[in-house]
Image (cartoon, rainbow, N blue to C red; front, side, top):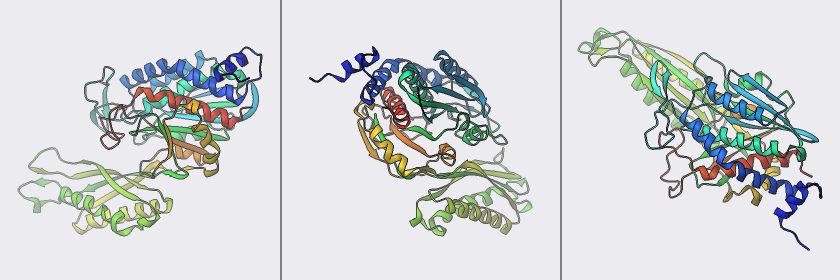
Length: 433
């Protein structure tokens, strides 16, 4: 005689049968469906009230309140400024696994349209800017809160311990401050209790409900740079009476593009240097004293990262010197290559493919140059970082706006898949029996 998985789950819950792996995964599926309305509401609320790195006070309070309401064994706040670490002990002995979500938003102004669109404004880099969850961290936080509720509701059947890492400042802390994954690790987020593996996911502008993975290098290493080109202010009608940092900065911007295109061996992997910010001057007829360039260096090869940083400094300083100016170069922050432990990926792929997770497809991702400081956790323990497609219905991957665009959109229907995937990899790693 054969019974449905739903009937078996009910029987097991009543204590008439031992909880098998099959009934655990059915339980996850059902609980993920039950918590879906909350996850969507949390996502909308966090989206409407975004906060920049190291300033996620409201978001952290929301997370901590949720974990405490679930009777977590421990809830630590104020980790790495505004991070939250929750510890959930299962009812059976076993190892320790961590699940991570990032909470910070970006200095991006959101267009009107969504009923929960952000209207928040703040100061960033000395300017008044809009604030928006343009990278999907609102979805990450809401999904991990949902996974926390799923696993807390079935903790008696869970082996080992799950550590929930709600991290601030993934996009980088404010200049002059520490933060992000590096500070979480420094303050013991993986040590109390000692974590043996860490998992995380990122929403991407791909077909909704799909999951993607990659062995080894999954996301690029990245560092930021700041180049201050210092000249001598003069009248715009008499450039010879001063030293023009605008022209020199323009030359530097152009020259930097020759580093990845002509000086780096791209057979080792893709690499780039991008200038994202140019600031200088206050009036059309005044050549200013200085121009500041800010940007990023990215590569999937760690040695290439070091080499490009050295070339960038040499290029900027020499071009400035050729015109009698100076260039102060600062290369800082960023993240190492996000490296998925190949053995861990192979072990956990069957978990992502479980029908109870509900993914519409599970496929291998192509490498990209987007970076993630999840890599810092992976330097300490084996980690697996995978991707969830969230394109709204009717929007093709070719037409979808990228992360960090003010037009980036998230399909709420995909969130349930993320909740189930996070809970499933945790339970499977811990060893459902």
